[in-house]
Length: 90
Image 1: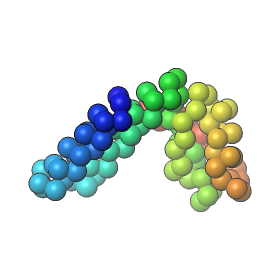
Image 2: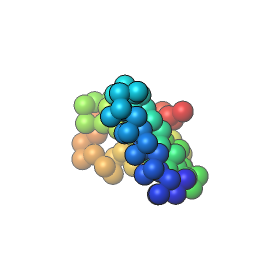
Image 3: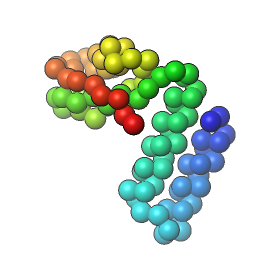
Image 4: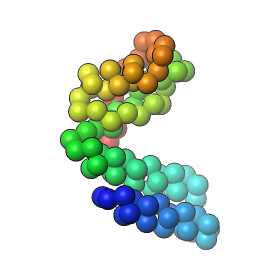
């Protein structure tokens, strides 16, 4: 998915939300899915990983080629991550 396609998909989801034919939860799911597809295709063979643990990292999603690289990426983004785990996001 290229940038223009991603923006069009997000714009369409926003229009559906504004028209009342989509809930906020549906809008969030569609936009998140579009962004995840764009990011993983843009960056190549990357997988989205979600961190779980302390407040500083809980829910943080990063793109990385492996679980080990995802942990490293989280450590790069958060100054004091504490103990945490990462799991692939499907």
